[in-house]
Image 1 (cartoon, rainbow, N blue to C red):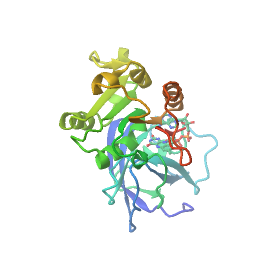
Image 2: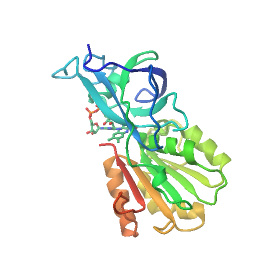
Image 3: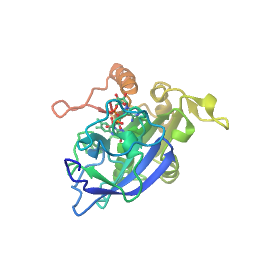
Image 4: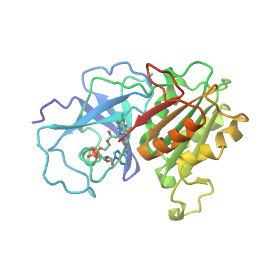
Length: 271
Ligand SMILES: Cc1cc2nc3c(=O)[nH]c(=O)nc-3n(C[C@H](O)[C@H](O)[C@H](O)COP(=O)(O)OP(=O)(O)OC[C@H]3O[C@@H](n4cnc5c(N)ncnc54)[C@H](O)[C@@H]3O)c2cc1C
């Protein structure tokens, strides 16, 4: 028996690729707390839960009853409190994700009753422009922010720069293309780092996502330069991308935001 009751149920398992899923989780018999878009929750499964095919063997095996817990940014809107969506990447050697990938609709897991985090859109003063830069599943908090806060036609610009290895790893691409089509103040820049593997030649941007900023794509799209005076920048995902992008932004006069010292760079590191 797990040391904590499994208090939630998988309502949907949307497989983007075999190693990338959107998991919809519904609390069973309790209500999700109010949360701010960009915040994260924690899910858990006991060590006894099976691992998915293709994941690495574990040695030693974990305590079968103890919950393995990890944090995940909420990808769904905070306007919806029936469920949360998580956008999860498989780490084949990992402790939790191989167990999460073995879940099917109707399976139970533990969902924390708390949602927390300071990586939120409400930290941005009104009237500022926003650039959201992500690698992989670092896109998750932005999907929650956009589906809750994006105001089409507002004078403030919002842009998403999303980097992945392959085009098929660009989850939420059709939603973001649709938003770009509907909202003239929203723009989306997908970029892939391994174009040689594409079955059909990729005609979009290639390289690392932070290179797009350096290449000035935002300035070209907006028609003016993003500066610390007019723009806030969110960075989410891999530490390598965050460190590189942050160094560039600091050189341009941006500063990291904290509760004590407000700045324009907002950071969420996944590991
Ligand atoms: C605030 C916060 C929010 C997060 N939100 C998400 C999210 O929305 N989606 C998500 O997939 N992960 C997210 N993570 C990462 C997540 O908590 C786990 O670390 C991750 O799923 C791996 O768990 P694991 O037990 O399988 O691997 P572990 O046994 O914990 O191994 C961790 C190692 O796996 C690697 N790793 C961790 N995350 C990833 C990743 N996404 N892609 C590739 N390699 C990785 C790193 O090398 C890390 O050291 C978040 C982390 C934090 C701190």
